[in-house]
Amino acid sequence: MKTSKLFSAILFFSLPLIFSLVNAQTPGVAISDSSGKISDASAMLDISVTGSTKKGILIPRMTLTERGTISSPKAGLLIFQTDNTSGFYYFDGTSWSRISNSGFSIPYSNYTTSSGDAFSITNNGSGTGVYGFGYNGNGVYGQSTSGRGVYGYSYGGVGGSFTTNSGYSLIATGGNAGIGTLTPTEKLEVSGNIKSSGTVTASGFFGDGSGLTNLSGSLSLPFSASPSTSSNAFEINNSGGTAFWGQGNSGGYGLYARYNNAGNYGYVGGSNYGVFGSDGSGTAYGYLGGSRGVFGHSNGDRGVYGESTLNTGVYGMTNTVGSNAYGVFGYNGVNYGYLGGQNYGVYSSGQAGGTTGWSSTSDIRFKKNISALVNSLQKVLTLRGVSFDWKTDEFSERNFKSSNQIGFIAQEVKDILPEVVNIDSEGYYSVEYDKVVPVMVEAIKEQQKTIESQKGELNSLQKRISELEKRINKIQTNVGSAPIPDSENQNKSVSN
Image 1 (tube, helix red, strand yellow):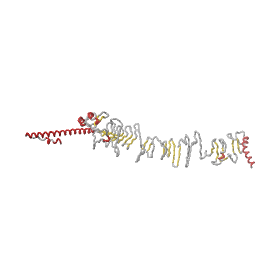
Image 2 (spheres, one colour):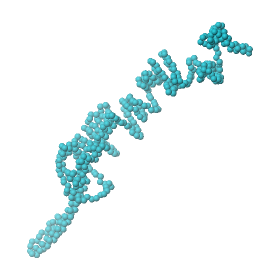
Image 3 (tube, rainbow, N blue to C red):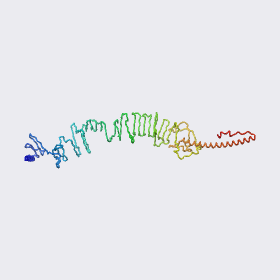
Image 4 (cartoon, helix red, strand yellow):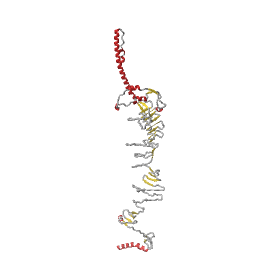
């Protein structure tokens, strides 16, 4: 047996040489079960079986571990692996690869640093270029450092289609991508809910806004929506800073609102006013932060109305310096008045009145350098009261009354009581009439002192006269003349 095996081995390795010598006229070696076989011109080794009993060729067989002991394998080396994933393996110069009847084995994983496509399949028919299906994992998965992980292109069909049991999960066609729809009409169209744990940035949003909930962060503009909900269409709650902040430029508004298209409207942050509101017909309108701090116009009820249970009902302020700048301005078509103007805290062009008197602060705790008024009587005697008519034609904007008036001439009062005269920014004089009252009081007191002094002197003279009358009567009695009436009793009313 040993001799037979040795002979067979010698014969196996000798045959190529024998046949090569026999067929030396050809460049290759031919092995065949029939004589006279010549190798094909394109082959260095041509093995053929022409008889009825067909046979094959056996490639070296080994395990995965044995394959690993091959030292410095050459590219193109072929073996048959008998364990693990058995099959024919070839060495490509870098690693061993299994030869599969489908092109490559599954599962398949590889790595390349090529600048071209790592994996490319072209189907010129009507079928799918690449089709992948996974029960729990990815149907198709690709990863690239700088290129495309998965790329699909179709002349007339869908570039990429990803399907789940519930329908199409991703469609890319005509430059548009769709999720849950076969016919996307935008760059990305989603049929269903969208959930994102990161930031969604968009240059615009259009729709009824009904699906927007729990918004936080910044909302990209422009934003437009037309909901028909009975609740708040747009609501922002902020427990910290400003809930809503808007700014408009180039004739726009920071915030604009209108009721029922042609109804009431208003805006915040316009080019002329901080806040403006109108009933839509021009009958009533008003604004805040214009040339007047607060302005209201109404042909119906109130131009400006404010109510507060704790603090200020209406508050207005202007930082503009000018005769037409007011904190709060009111006009009824005839008379006007304002609060917080350039020259007056409160001003009225018409008659001012109320159910109570005007109260001025006078607490001693606010005052210092207090001294009594002197020469008040002389000052009052110097004042000149006059009657006059206003120059209504020359100063029509001041809405002066046309009836005859009484008062002082401010320029004359200034020389006597300068404390009660004011001059506004335009050089016009005014008199604080209420401040004349203390001077009048002190003048009356001075006059009363004079009266009391004169009464004392008069009583003294009356007593002297009475004494003289008594003496005269006594003398007349002695000489027999009629007595002189008692002047003391006749003039008791003087002392009383």
